[in-house]
Length: 314
Image (cartoon, rainbow, N blue to C red; front, side, top):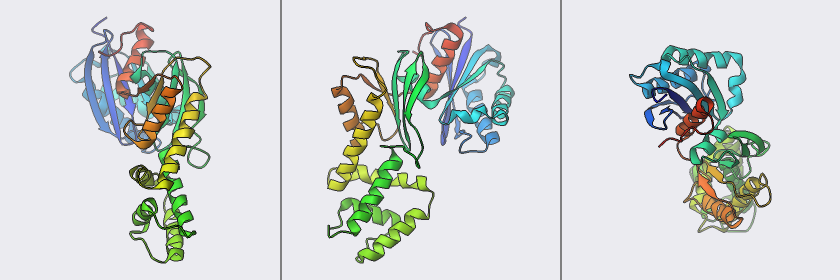
């Protein structure tokens, strides 16, 4: 049995990582490739990159030793498209894999990367936001995740949009242009015009000239000025409160299962992430951070083969 392995792949928009795990829990290899999410890359390109990462992770190992391959990615429903699914299966077949392939969401893989518990909550707060209830290692219920137009409260997009809205409000008031508003104007139009009416118009034009998701880039400005600008601090406080409610809403009274946090906004060391962690801990939650998504995917693949007793990666 120890000669048999499983493969986990963490598929991202900018990078892809593969992890080969022995059924004894010993890592056997790692591989990397470029972004391979078919929601943001042509399916044939995405599939080819997944194959490249898996091939590097397998190295000289016989691909026939792989018992299961598990893919984790955001927007996993894309793989329900038969044409996209075929691209991925064909790319893995080129590498030599003949084992079953399972596709799960990035939330499920992230939860497994942080804990061996079969149940709990995972909160993803990056460009977008969503919370998921995990039961028996699988997503059983979600809250949020509606995308930038309908939701994503507390996410980087939400933070960035609120930064622009706060700047517009400042420009229409008698309030002095603070650190956040000045930073937003410099990022958006490369200056802080003395003419407020002109600045207001130019900022609206600049914000609407780009894809809406580009507003997420202003999130960094909110974090950078949370300590020296009251409007930035208010946005940070509200984001943390929204994300806290989202995570806790999926729990039952008296629950002690962990909450796993994923994404740049929820990261420790950032103003939103630190407030979020403190609030969840105050509510009695065990708060963990997602670790290696590829290793989490590999462990879930091992469970498919060896059952819930499969050892976690050492």
